Every structure is written in structure tokens, then in C-alpha cells.
Image (cartoon, rainbow, N blue to C red; front, side):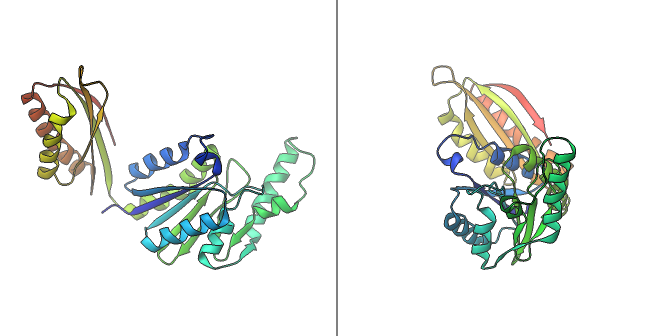
Length: 274
């Protein structure tokens, strides 16, 4: 079974519609490709109590990993670690290693001529305050370190919200951990387009194919209209290795295609990815 992972995205801008939540989309796709299973994505405002409440609620479900995104910077509304600390009932403390990371980045910015002074002002020191027991992870793109902390069986990882920073830290520090936790589990997916058959006629076919292939998940995505029906069927599975995963998908795909053809549909492959 794939290890369960939940994501909490922090940012009022996500909830008022100013910013599209591309981080959740990227993380979900990347985690799935590593053999993990994203079971829930939650979005909360930049408020300590809301962050803390969401973290507590999530840890009670005991996912293997909890990833928070956003709210690690120096401004007043960067409150993720404060919320995490409140949820875990621990203090925020200046972490020496994190402080060195922050100071080193500002010195680099001075050397590059991007700023005049590398003074550790209170907003900059704020990025080095971590919940007790947390360990900083280097940020190769930006300034604020990421944080990893154990929460009674759930590994919590706090990532920055800037997409380039989030991706760099994830690939450098988190992906290897998730890959190890997933073991040899492989995710495989493929899609086909079926034209000429309306979705309501395909619904019992999906039920039948999923019943006969319990390891395969099938999702239908209508692309046309009732007058010109076109449906994309996405098939996905997670298995112990790529050969087994492909076998699961192939068997379900053949059955789905045969039954769609009997309904008068036309089949066209879309893509196949691992």
C-alpha cells in the first residue's frame, strides 16, 4: 500500500482567488510518481489558529507524511511555523544551524551586489525560529530554510510557498525520503479517448471494469457534449514494480476498450506515463 501523505497549503491569497494553487498540483503529481498517495489537500488562511487547527486535525489521522507549503518567510503574515508549534504544544526557538543558513544567504546576496548589508534584522532572524525538535533543510534557491520534524509517527515537512524554492527543496531533500518510504512501489497511468458514447452509457462499464480489476482506478473526464460525446478515461494503479503495474493497466484497458467498442465508441490512446 502506498504511504499516505497530506498537504496543507497556507496562504490567504489562495482562498481569495488571487493566486492559483499550482504548488498543490505539482506536489500531488510528483508525490504520486514517487509511489506515495496524496489523501487530502487542505488550504488555510495566514492565521495561527487556523494553521494549528489544521495541523492537529491532520496529525490525528496519522498520515505517514504531512507537507505544509507557504508561510516561512520574514513578513508578518508568514505564520506557518508558529501554527505548527502551537499545534505540537512546543516553543519556537532560534536554531543555530538555520540561523547560519539565513546569514550565509544574505552574505552571498551582498557579495553578489544584490544588497548592501547582511545584517540579521528581526524579520530575517524570524526565518531561523523553528519548533522545538525541528531540523532545518537547506534552501538552494531562496533564503528561508525548510523544516522537518517528527510528530508521533507523522513526518511533518514545512516547505516555502515560492514555487521554485518549494520544488528545489522537495527534489533535493524530500523526494529521496519519500522514495525510500515507498520502497519499490511504482505508479503507472494511461489514458484513452472514447468518442461516440455518452458518459451515462459508460458509467456501468466503468463499474464493471473496476470490479474486475480492483487495483486499477478509472476516472472519466467528459471533453465533448451530449451531441458530440467525447470522454477521456484515465486509468492508474500503484504496484510493487513496473511490470506488475503495466499488467494491471493493460488488462483493465483491454476490457474497457472492448466494452466501449461494443457500445459503438471509437478508441484513441492519449498517453502513457510512469
